[in-house]
Amino acid sequence: MVLNSGKGGKGCRKMKNSTGGTTNRTLEFKEAFQQYGLVTDMLGNGRCRCVCSDSITRLCMIRGNMRKGSMNRIFKGDLVLVSLRDFQDSKADIVHLYKPEEVRSLINYKELDEAFVKNPTRSNDDSIDEFVEFSEIETI
Image (cartoon, rainbow, N blue to C red):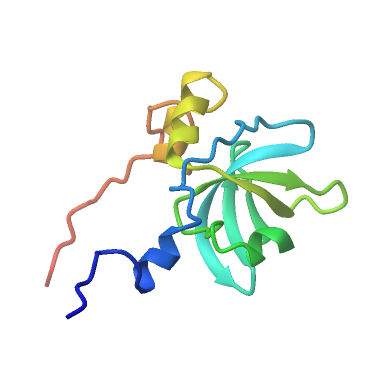
């Protein structure tokens, strides 16, 4: 009678070469002609709509090497680094996707405002200038 020693099988072969996901990435800061952007809508075909840190909404294209990699999935609400086009202000290219730990470190370095990450459409001041006033409507 042969007993199983606990080694082998389909799961053992899969875990043999895995690193455990502990890769260290360098934190990328924005440079000239780049902005931080927050993804508001996924449009399909490698395109999305982003609100950039200069409060302009742009149509962004996902780079080819980010499309092919399965680790770089972009979802609604993700923070990305956007490369601006000098000939089209309404369009841009997504260069880098930030992980949640990197977003926290960008806030700690004062590179990114925390209010932008939470609510990108509202400006930095907390005052609301527009008020809606309802009047009574008389019914006959």
